[in-house]
Image 1 (tube, one colour):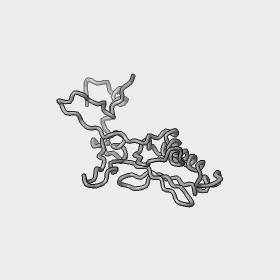
Image 2: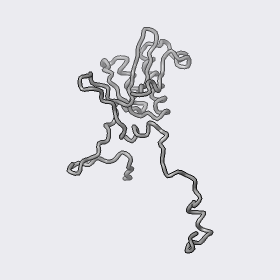
Image 3: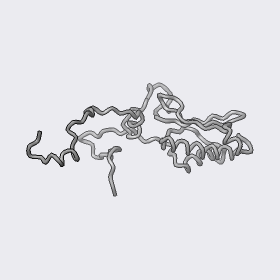
Image 4: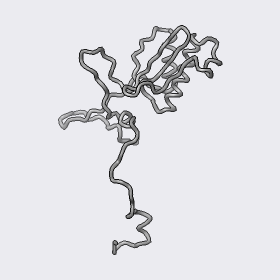
Length: 172
């Protein structure tokens, strides 16, 4: 096959009889979102703002329970946590008081990190010193950023500033 190459070394480095395809298929639909090159839905310019997100935090409060969930713009709810879940309800005195909101924030942040969601859009306006503010503080302490990164825009040749590409790793 190759007369100038030692046959005993070739199988260690190169597979000549490889059946792998030369075409790459991405089976992770969230990969482009993590690399910041996926499209964010804008909606129309006459619609109300706040629709430009990949993941959004929703907090639903009723008289009996509190529910926090992450909603993907295409697939709907991805992760949720409720104070009415048996494991959480058994640990709480009341499922709608301030400690319930704080514990819900901790559980919700842990579930988000376990699923690989580290940033999401949040348009909730908390009252100073209120339950919702304590919930959001616990989510942030848990390691979740409540603001999504902007979509990477390829710089034009005449642009003075060239942002770092999100898929390239630079070591310091």
